[in-house]
Length: 95
Length: 494
Image 1 (cartoon, rainbow over the protein chains, first blue to last red):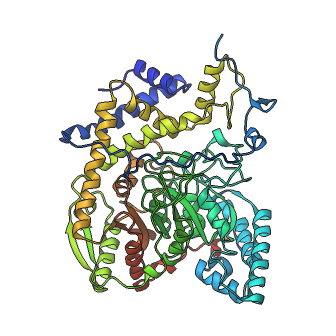
Image 2: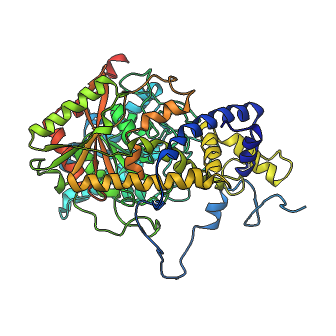
Image 3: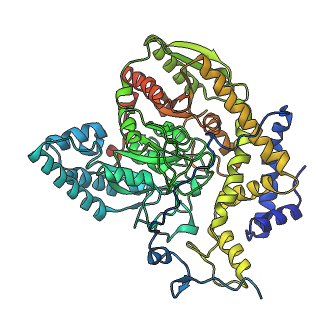
């Protein structure tokens, strides 16, 4: 079933993407076509098949908890769009 | 032969003998880039001053070694290489082919880059890529499309199309790319060079800007199989900074080249020889299989029954992971930040809306949908279960055979623009490389002929961590043929 405009707007909001009306309509059609193609997975009998999240089975990789130097602050801040007094500045997140 | 046309091995021998200096070699390549790249557009950025300074340091190292003898210098000392612009390079802008990172300058090198530099390799510059490696043609680069050196009206493949085109046009002796669903093998195949996707976990991903973390792997692109082995040797191995890099010994890949294929069992997966494969491509690959047979390998027909499900599984899993990985581009810490916005949330929406190109937004949308409440089970979880079946296909096949051999891509390089408007058509050019990536096994593309005057790639797929056998088969094939010595006619056109 094709996606509705409301679904596209809902996904865009979850993904925090500002889209133009034209983009919304284009993605509505393209995503619908891709999802229709992906529906072929519904044909497979997957009962009892475990999901594979990773190609190598690794668990709980840890390192000794020892203090070590991190990236220098000024090098990190050099890429920040806005900073002051050694801190990255962000617009208020609460009114 | 002119210096830029040398292989890494040939150049390294000349450098050690003192018959060529790294500065001469680097200057000759920079001159070639200056002359040819305005037409090919493989590089997003060239760094001539840094490259020449590194070359002079390499020459000093070589001179010292010739005076004092001792252990031979590293193989990559003084060798000029290109790096895909999705690997972080300290002090050199790294854009990922995206506007959102247009002014990003990494404060550190990716581990793979650091390891090349530790050997004394010269970094020439950063090569073009589809935005965040999402694409198969470089047409999704926010900057420009790279052209195939064999036919400038066609794509070089992607996403590592800049690296493959640079190597094919002798504008670098070798290069690094990254492969998530075929992004090293497919452009290598379409440009007539060698490209290897190592086993997942073989090469550290630290400093490789993340696209789909369970699939991404850095791989070498080279003029021949031996050079490919030299580059892999330099970058492979455990790195504590990437917890998914596997702590297993790194074999001697150069020693693995010799030995031939006599007695080896080469699986021919029937699902890779189907309708939809261009006739000239199928012919070239079948001829390559006969060469392997003549060399003493046994061909065995095998089945990878879930092959057709790799494409839909990949295009749910990779976008799902991408949608999470790309959440970091929020206009706060680095990259583009749209200031004229109502509040912080509007700033984030506007930054992402303007900073990402159409394919990246499409995949973020698709991945977000596949992970969202109500659709997770039907799409993402189903795709992950399908991935298990695809891996089991390979496990079963490798009980019967040593390697698998098949086409890299169903067609030769396609015309620029032909598939740009239809995402599904574009995705189909990866149909033979995706399953290998989902399974996490290794695969190489080696030149195996031409169709309509354009290169065809033979894909040899090996079991996890069996790069030695893959390289051995590829090398035996290469020694018996001369496809890898063919060069696109670029100089005559100038």
